[in-house]
Amino acid sequence: MINNVVLVGRLTRDPELRFTSNGSAVATFNLAVNRNFTNQSGEREADFVNCVIWRKPAETLANYAKKGTLLGVVGRIQTRNYENQQGQKVYVTEVVCDNFQLLESRSVSEQRQQTGGFGNQDSGNNFNNFSQNQNKQSFGQSSSKNEMPSFDRDADPFGSSSQIDISDDDLPF
Image (cartoon, rainbow, N blue to C red):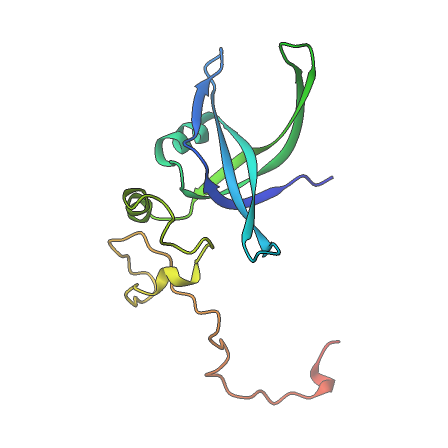
């Protein structure tokens, strides 16, 4: 059986860090994940996914991620149940995260928080626009900024190559 979840979204609140009675760190958070389509009004809807992460990654997440942080998580879906104070059985479905990745630089995150959120930004995840102001560097050089490499989706990777002389008899299939 396969139970694997990969999500990219923004934190709806600061992660909540607690410690169990035996000292294990556990952080809970909620991730807003955009859907791939728009509704009838043309607006993009989002799913709000409850997540939990344990031990050292929980402490790291609580120290570095804040409300609005763009985050990637890898984990599994888990459903558990408990009995509440009224004696009713409550079912909880959440993503138990094995790992996470901060998907924006600290400066971008701080700038967004200073300007008050997402009011002047596109609600989508513009990974392609991230590298527009990046200086061109050769492979292996490091930059003082923590930037993503420049990728151009529309560029033809084979545009500078010459035509290959091959016949159907040369193909193995």
